[in-house]
Length: 300
Image (tube, rainbow, N blue to C red; front, side, top):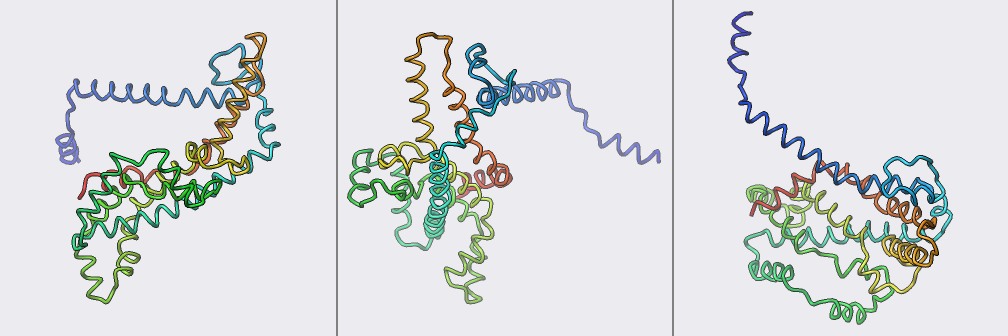
């Protein structure tokens, strides 16, 4: 027993006091930084449940004195919000699927060293990260394709992201070539190698890139402003913009600065509704997020 205790005492590592103090300071800094990141969202959440009178008297609300669901009742009683959420869900789900199909196919092809013209295509992809056609040429292309006022105008122009493509390509390059060679010796085609070997081994990268695309599609704003004229096809972010404009106009027309219209709490509630789906999805992909992004960014 004494020998076991002596071995345990020998195995203990004495951490210097300076290192302990440094770790404590790092933890405190991270806690303060996390709190600063959470406070704005907590303010929005608390204000969405507060009355208009409390919003007028308290500039910063975390826990309202009087809880009310009037803003959420108003939102749920408006059919426009359901149409906008439906459009955003369609764009997010279908857009993420289309983007992942195109990105994974391109990334796999560009990760194979035997592809002819591989360096040239990689150069073109990186070039698009530095220079783009611009807003007006892109609008002319979308218009000539007949996509104006179409839901597909929110998906196809941004279907492939050069940044996400490079991350996934680098991840595929990190997979040993011996696996592909063994599969081909067993009679696998390129499609078989891709679907049976590459994709199952790439779940962290796929989850990470899918999350990137999903957040981008859910936050679609500029494309909808440029290409969508029908209010029934507005995504949730454009509807949020309209509510902000209406709220600002009502504040500007108010005769007294003490009058805060109910639209202020409605605006906060819409922000919560617009943010909540991504907050629900993120924890399920969070365990793959760091691993997929780090591996895809440092290898290759």
